[in-house]
Length: 100
Image (cartoon, rainbow, N blue to C red; front, top):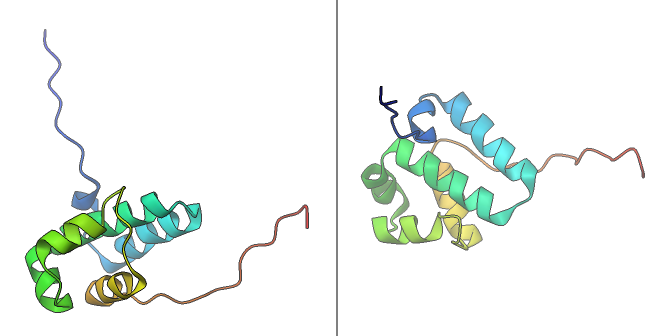
């Protein structure tokens, strides 16, 4: 008997603004730039890349290239994408480590 599998795509689970916010929050909490860019890309795909390109004024190829694990999006791109997703970036106090 052959085991059948289907590809997993995180974008399929990002069907509410709260889900997108939580997903991106985890990525930002990691502090890993590649993970953050990739998570923004996944959220962009969940939202619809064509619609996101229209809202941001960026090309689809520009968004795909910037928002990948190896992408290095400029702050302006991050702000445009988060705004188009219906989110904002807000600084919050960092959790203090118990060693401090």
